[in-house]
Length: 374
Image 1: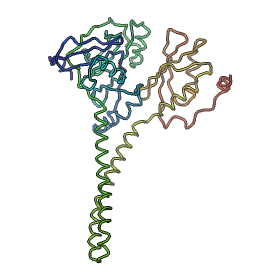
Image 2: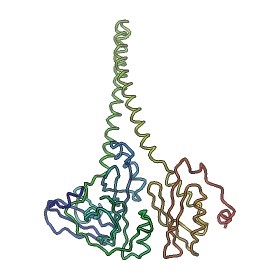
Image 3: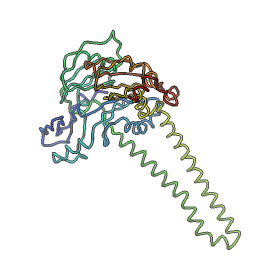
Image 4: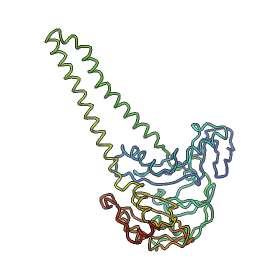
């Protein structure tokens, strides 16, 4: 999987896009690489191994717009054993910076810097980036988790990152020394773009509809032309009836193909077994007191949700929020991740599947009712 690391890549003009600007390429020739700072990217993993291999790219293309926070997003995807590791960035911002430097965005190979740093087989590490620091968790050659910090991190942040990775307390490690890994000539794995997969789906759908229109339209035109001849003789009518039956068989075949496509699309949508993000946001919002407290950060992957709550006034009492969130019926196993700021508190929880979540929100308690009227 990592055999490309040792290969000498072709010469390239490599621009480094940092938070404070762009470092121009040292070379004047070769293919143009636009390397994106880790600070400009978001990272996530999507486990689609349960779907047939032919359906995974289409399923990923449906999920990415729900996850990405940008109106215009671009992606770099690495597939490993049915799991998609995805880096996402603000495509409008990056393309504007490329044009600012007199280049055509379509001719730039955009690569997140994490894909150019030497990978690990197993373990945790802190690595120096173009901007800030990246924490990584590797297992069997796969990047399971990645988090970026703008500068030096504390021991609490490092322990919180390990808890997010699911590492048991007895196996958690002290903060390691900051490692430096030079940018490699080429990415450590093949990069794909989900736009290509969605384009293939759209092209196939367009071709199918074209064939369906032809199958339905041609017999109608044919019948219109032959209408005057049908009146001439019964023999002509019998001949045309035979033609129509032949055309109808083609229509039935097209209808069968349409039903198969509908069944496949339903299987893709059935993969989402959890409530919509807007429904979960509403449940969290109902759990907040009416004193200006708001959700500052929101991260969701499969059935795991992490939120950071910010209070404008007094310190946050975490146990109260744990009880309130679990009483919504949407969440379970709510845990507190301690923050240094008493007015900020991070919670992790398990999102209950659709079959276990209540059909309607629970009635507010007396305490919540008082808060709503205050």
